[in-house]
Image (cartoon, rainbow, N blue to C red; front, side, top):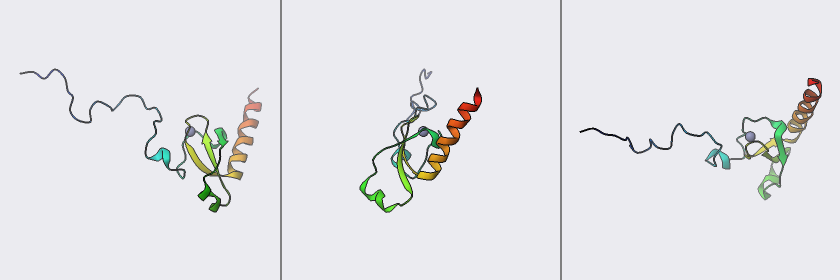
Length: 89
Ligand SMILES: [Zn+2]
């Protein structure tokens, strides 16, 4: 008796495609993705985010993850990113 295929539970959907699918961390705005702050774009805050002074709500232009970040840190990252690109040439 030979087992030709292994479809044990939980075996099928691993190892394949590490696309940033919406998961538990995707909905947590306090977790930031690893794409860097320079690619963030401003989006509208949720009402409760008014209680977080200094933080702004952004969406990553690379992976689409919504996340909170300090406004100043993002601005600095964007400026650094742009000046780095200009220095390449
Ligand atoms: Zn990202």
